[in-house]
Figure 1 (cartoon, rainbow, N blue to C red):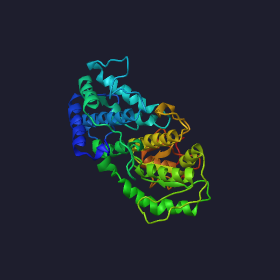
Figure 2: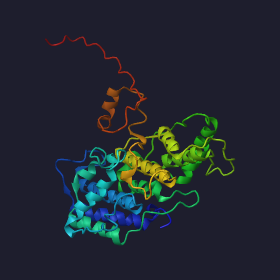
Figure 3: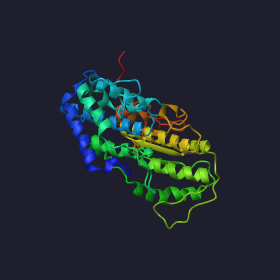
Figure 4: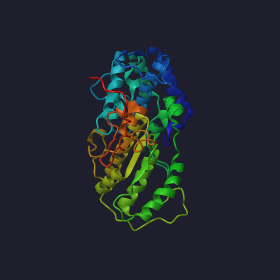
Length: 363
């Protein structure tokens, strides 16, 4: 595979066929219903569960294709035999491997992905899905070509999220930005900022609607080159002269500056969790390519200090209204664990004055 399989219509259709196949076999968990919404009506719960399981199988297959985790779907590990009746458990084990880092643990958290915990497909249906990944499905690994990003950036799993979870498209307007559009915008914003603030320790950037992290990943690329080589080159605006003269830092220091500079926010918990996974692995990959981390890169060996600052929240309201008002507007987000608010340098605005009541208090 030399290009993003998420761009292949036949591949997308096959994934959706698996959703259709798994949905009738789903047994719902009465203790963990999907929170009701316009998109998640009770009658749609089995399909939402099936979509969650199929999407997570994509993430697991992508991780296996890059040797980030041990193989459980592409092939059985040496010494282990997968019984036909163990499909559901086997998929669960494949998913669990993705949460073995502090930055990626939220990918499986019930508050971030309730549909994954709201039920499970039958073992036979899960086995069929695993067999497809093992025998027929294309690899999700492909190299970078020209300025196009390679698959280690997580581009395919970012693009597949709205394909399988269409509620992300309809309710959160999650439309994936092509890499060349992201590059053009960064050429006109981040690159001039690097030139202007070249002597600053950090180049603070934030994507207030970061989605699965396409802009974040491209910003990491730009700043990695700046802080490891002292040069930054525009990718889309090819007529611009490269900026030179920066201080080349050791790779570990460059990674620390990136983590302190590139921030993101998204209102959808699962979407933000995918962005955290992608940025964690990509920074780990860059450090492995620089021989700072051992190769092949493994997710559970990426230092726990690599913690991207990607928050879950309403970027139009956070910091503009009080914590109590925010909780009234977004009760689920206000109580979400690991949402990254407040950060160390963040303070909620004061609560508005409460009008005095003229009614005497009860004795």
